[in-house]
Amino acid sequence: MSTFQAPKGTYDLLPPVSATYLAVREAIAAPLRNSGYGYIETPGFENVELFARGVGESTDIVTKEMYAFETKGGDQLALRPEGTASVLRAALEANLHKAGNLPVKLWYSGSYYRYERPQKGRYRHFSQVGAEAIGAEDPALDAELIILADQAYRSLGLRNFRILLNSLGDKECRPVYREALQSFLRGLDLDAETVRRAEINPLRVLDDKRADVQKQLAGAPALRDYLCDACKAYHEEVRALITAAGVAFEDNEKLVRGLDYYTRTTFEFVHDGLGSQSAVGGGGRYDGLSEMIGGPALPSVGWALGVDRTVLALEAEGVALDIPAVTAVYAVPLGEEARRVLFAKVVELRKAGVATDFSYGGKGLKGAMKNANRSGARYVVVAGERDLADGQVQLKDMETGEQEPVALDAIVAEIRRRLA
Image (cartoon, rainbow, N blue to C red; front, side, top):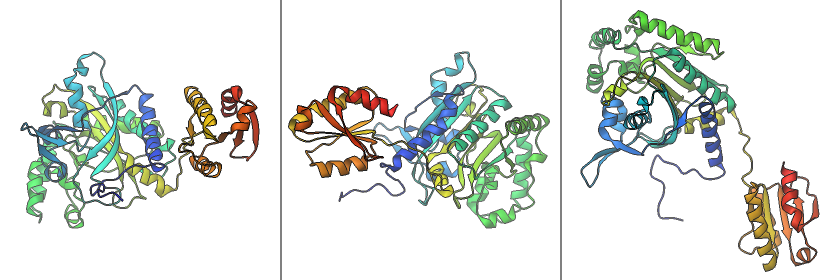
């Protein structure tokens, strides 16, 4: 056994479970690629200030959970705790918004890091697939992203998830609500940390999960009563477009999300089979984030879906993904000459696009066939000295158990025909 273990709160993805994670990532990405979103990849760490400004200094992510460090050169960096700020930074740095084709539509997949108390569904290292539409203020974009996430989840076979929807207003109407909420919160019996948070961003207090805080929030002013006409109209259009697409959602006036940059549309995907960590993904509109990190005004919207929690949701619903076997053909040589001949055929099969593996290590027939069975291969090719003398190999169908000789020079074509 190794002296070392994975750090607390992290995990290793190993076969065959890792195939499920890959399938989930592919399912989430597929509707995005089909809707004009291009792939982007950013560094695993960024300048600390990017997240302090963008995510928000009052958030738990920045104050408690971010892995920050100083390099030997004195740079203050942080492992990325979320994807949006990094993607927007990269788009601005590359001047993608100046190419004349707005919105810039991007999707990404990667690992993120937060120092949290580890539990099922909450890790210090986790995986997300995200999408961002940068540079356009259009309720159809908000609706598009919600619909694409719904489509991705349903393509995986998930059914027991809910979409929560809210509007957080904009720079015109939210300050009025902010003041009213702060006045209300000042009359409550809150701890010093929550009081401090209320002064920086009072909406974050609404997201507090503690029962004693939620009890005191009964009767808090509702944001919907403070929305300006423009925000009301925008939100109603988002709701109408989602409804017309046949996507069900629930209005939730307390939905804030954990990041400071959201404006107007905010949404969350929750699964009731996951216990306390019920959110499997979420996002919203962030029209002011570009300016927060030093860019021009670029109204934008996006989401991130948790791969880890999506896998847990599949398990909760008992959904088993149809994942093809890694290996379609397994070659078993008996003897040195057969080893050289069959290895050449394995190379041919792989070049022809057939997933093929080989019995390495000089195992006997019994051991090699056990490995072939474990590989999940549909066909096994066996050859010994007598087979080669006759110019043939034995082809065994692992599903039916039938075995028959096939000419050596025809084996690649025969396997391709059977797998077609």
